[in-house]
Structures are given as structure tokens and as C-alpha cells.
Image (cartoon, rainbow, N blue to C red; front, side, top):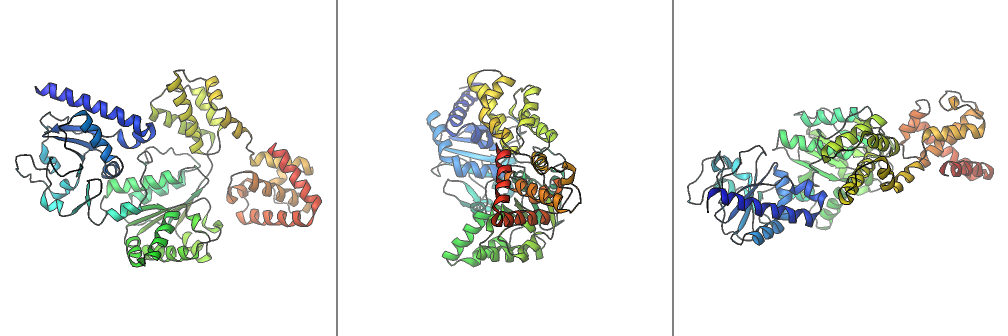
Length: 506
């Protein structure tokens, strides 16, 4: 068979394998993990493929190794193993005999005739094997292989780092700084995250990101990790949720192996804990986290934390822990503005490579104000509908497809609406909601409005305070407690507040 025929045959087989993978795992998982797979070569019963990053290689090997090998075997019975190498996507195209224009030496492999390549062990570490047997395929440089251990999926991984991957949550390849849309509500958090990712030493420790659901905290944490992995891949990073930190600690207690737990978490270069509010009320976990936090900060190791509230507002967290969490830089991610939402939709539509009419994007930016996740989910729904049904995206089809989501958002109450309705009810001016006047006739309606804002919106206490003339979050907390007390002692007042609530919710 000629070289061109061999290339065409392998390309057709790979197209069928990709098609079956896309069907089996679904569009979302395929786009995130399998779409970057690139065919490099097929020679001597070995299929060689590449991915752009080491992390992606490990994830594919852990989750899709056996299936990829099985699909290739279905297409070509002579395939005995599948190798995945890490290399940038800009490498030259492979030749059918298994050699790229740059040669196998650039990948630190040995050829089938036994001639050893002279590249470093670091290059050899970038190679991995996805196979149920050790037969076939190229062999690794021995000095590199000594540093590796074989995982259950047949992948050779760096010894001593497998446990880090077991603990760390996977990083979403979509969550990078390049894909983060910056606006006034998140510019401080973005700048701080970028500084932490690019700095060699901890510029502020910890970096504490907080804000409501779906505003970009997790995106920024993943972006920090990706940036560090790109710049300094040797630095050890553990990224996980507070819930998983607690699980690992309880597991260590049960197995009486707390020393290994301590050593692992206190020897990393960067520790990233997501949703730290979930350790509230967990005294033993808080104690361990407190000491781990102190140990890392004392060694000038970077700690990055996210939560839905500021450190001072975390419930069930000890005062000393709240104080420590506020030591470094606390960056609040505010709710999105119309301009930022529109920018996010435009960026997302470009990534999806679909043509969405500007009027549709503007309509979504006006209507869906809760969080970015819901906004992107709405865009995904209308794109999927257009693709599957074969109808173009219009304002009418958008309203039809998203009728349930739009109805739910229409029922959401804003702080401005609450202030207006309460001011009308108590016959005071809306300006009094923002003023410094403390007369009871003004202060009580203002407290009622703060109370309703706390219970009827997803805004944080500092955000509510800012809407009431730039007041501190402690003022809002006092107002909520005061209204709760009055409701418990004055039934008429309680009915009054409940009537306002029903009017606003209706």
C-alpha cells in the first residue's frame, strides 16, 4: 500500500473513532476532553495520538483509555496499543511510517529497531501508553521510566504525584484567563487572580474570592491553576472543594494516617480550596484547615480560597479562622451588569462558532440577570434547539425555547423594586432609603426593606448595604435581626411585613 493510501486509510479510521466517541460520551464531554486529541501516526501496530497538555493526557487516560483502545481495535484489528503524547498542536503533520517531519527524537522515544534516542528524560515523561497489554509500541528511555509508575488504565505517570491527582479535582480546559470576560463587577478579582498566577512568590496570602453563585469564582481558580501549570509545570498544585478536603481528613482519621494527610497538603506550592463556607460548623476540619493554612503561609506558599460570603460573614467559622482568611486580599465579584452579560454572550457565541442575531443576545442580557451559568445555559439551549431542529435562531424561537427560564427570571425581585414598594407602603421617599436620617419613621421602613432584600434576593449583605446608601454589612445584619425580633413580638407588624413579601413575590 502506498504512503498516500496508508495516510488516507488511517485518517478515515480516526474519523470513525471520533464519531463514535462523540456519540457515546456526549457533545459537552467530547468538546472538553476528546476534541483536542490529534492523530500523529499509525505504525507497527501502534497508534500514536497527541494532546496539548499533560493534565489533559492524564484525564483522557484515566477516563477514556479502554474505550479508545477498543474503538481503534474495532476499526483495525492489527492495533495492539494506543500511545498518547503531549505536544503543542502546531507540530508538523505525521508521515504514514510513524515519523513526523521533526523526527521521533523530539518526543524522546525509541524506534522499533532498538536505536535509542538521545533526548532528555523530561521529553520521555511526556509519553504515555493506553493499552491492556505491554505488547507492541515504542519503549521508554529507562532513566525516564524509572521515574514513572503504571496506573490501572495502562498510563505511565510520575511516581509520587498520582496521589495529588487523586485528591485534586479536574480542571476544566474552558476555564482559562483567555476565556474570562472582564467587566467592572469582576475586574479586581480578575487582576488579583492574574497577579497570583504570574507571580513567583505569593503577592498576597491568601487570595480570597467571594460572590454569589455562578459569577466566576471557580472559573478564576481554574484559570490560576492552568496559568501556573503552563508557566511553571514543576510547581505542585492541589485544587479541591472544601467538602472534599473534609472527606480526605475524615478518611485519614479513620485509617489513622493523619501524618500522610498533613505532609501531602502542607508540602504543596499552591493550595486552592473552593466553597470554603462548607467547613462551617465542622470543628475538627476547621482545626486541621487552620493549621494547614498557617503552615503554608509561614512557608510563603500560595493559598487561594473561594466562598459565597466574605470572611467576616462566614457562618459557623471560628473567629480566628475568619481573621486569618481576611489577612491577604479579599476580592468581591459583584453581580453582572448588562454590558458584562452581553460581552459574555458574545464571547460564548464565538466559542460555539454559531451566528446569533445581536437582538437575541441583547434580549438574553436584559432578561437573564441571575448569574453567568444560567446565562450560558440559556445560550446553549437555543443553539442546541437550532442545531437539532434545523430552525434559525430568532427572537421568537428564543422566547419559545426559554419560556420557563424567562418566566422564572421575570418573577425575581430586585432591591430597587423592594425599596420602591416599601417606600410607597410606609409613605416615605425612596431617597430616604439611601439617606443618613435616623428618625424612626424613616429608619424602620429602611430596615424592613433591608430585611426583605436579604430574603427575596440572592444579594450578599455587603451588596445590600451598598444599595442602601453605602452602609456596612453589619448594619444590614442588625436590621435583619431587629425585624425578626419585632415580628416575634408584634403580630400586626409581622402581618404587615408578610403582606409586603406576598405583594413583591406576586
